[in-house]
Length: 247
Image (tube, rainbow, N blue to C red; front, side):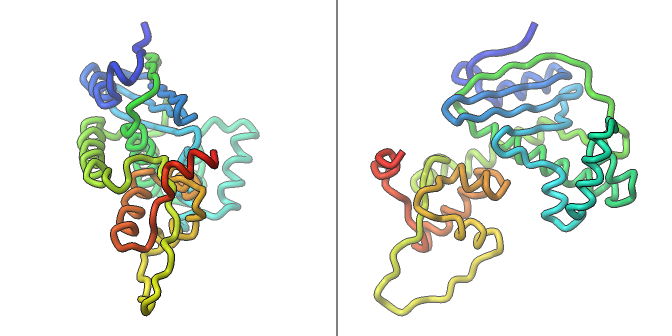
């Protein structure tokens, strides 16, 4: 019998804890009509082995390419092999071809899982369902199992940190924009590369959630950057009345 219900009755943290304690294997699907999004998390004996998000899948290949570990040609070759009938995952093919080391696959698969799971843990509305099924066989040198307990602990820490930012960044629907230039002397802007990427997408129309999707990073990471820029006065938020009127 599947485990399912609305998140308002059983929070996503409780769902993860239940699957961890009962050492379940299968797939947890979470759908949010409000967000027009859905995610899937795959469990093997209570541990998380894979995760994906519809609007922001954080694909392993994209993470590897962005980090410079592989080229577009490497990924094209791996996906071509899959289309030709190869049942292995992209990471398995890349390791077998000697393009990346197994430890790199492990690192970025963990990053992929964590980013999706932490985004899901911020959802307070929606519907979840879990269906038991045997875990998919994966080569041992490319298999990743992330402790659900560690994900819950880090997820709780992130939620606590976001709660301290809620006075300025209440949710992913906020729309940031550049603040008007002051009449005084202009100061030098010193930002990290990721902060510049966020800043370049501030058009007064895209909300935090859309920026996260565009950059393929978590809403939490974008929220922290926006909060910092709000604190320094570099940006401001479009009033909610304006965003509703333009919707």
